[in-house]
Length: 371
Image 1 (cartoon, one colour):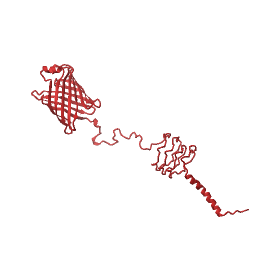
Image 2: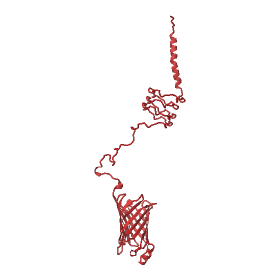
Image 3: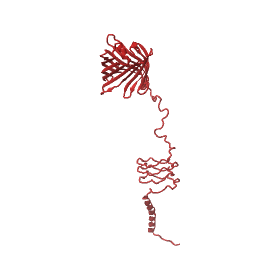
Image 4: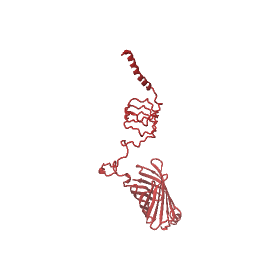
């Protein structure tokens, strides 16, 4: 048997060369660009990534060309810092329904990840369980029907909406003196009820201040109800002291375009006479307190009544212009004005026969208020 002797220097040199070979390969792969690698044809469905540790810094990796539709990521640890990773070129439009992400740990910081270019149109989220997320449908017993949530109302009782409270009000449109005719004119309206249903009491007329002290008035008691946003309806009974007759009343009151106050009321008397009153008014504000208020009124009848100085058709026209100053939170407004009254149609001839004025005008002064 021959024995070959190998020196120690030769053994050491051989071992060093064997160790340097894998290190050189590793150094060469660290500089490789994976962006152009086509892995679409590779079958990675059987690859086990459970032991892959991705907690390191992958901020410079380019995954734009990788097709990971069949990869199993259940064991991937993504708890590292991925804030600088660029996913803009990743194509996720394929079928990823078979991907198992149940074991992925994504607790790391991903606030800086750019997903702007990711196409997820083909992903199926139908089986995702989001029951633990905030929001969703409230349970049936989340709130009580009266919104009390089980809290008692105390000694003040159950709260109600303001619109359902019964209230009352008084509005005096006219309370003034006519110097030429030596009389006091009045017109007021009171009501009680809610925004949907009210009972109203209205009266208008004049009282002579001379020797006879005669009072002529038309007073109505009616039910009031809104017909729309700008119009209200009235229906009730009325009594006229001038002809000493009662009547059934129906009317429409509201605001026409450009804030023109408009009212139309019809009265059917017991003798078959029909009286129609039309009125309109407008408030022209000069400033926050001074107001100019023009008013127009027309009166018509359905048939002649010579005993009461009435003819068929339009009988009377009345106009007045007031200058008012609103005080006390605009609830009290003294005014001065000028009024004009004229008979129309056959009523002019009838008044001339009875030696009455067919036209009259007068200065007026009075007050308007409401509460």
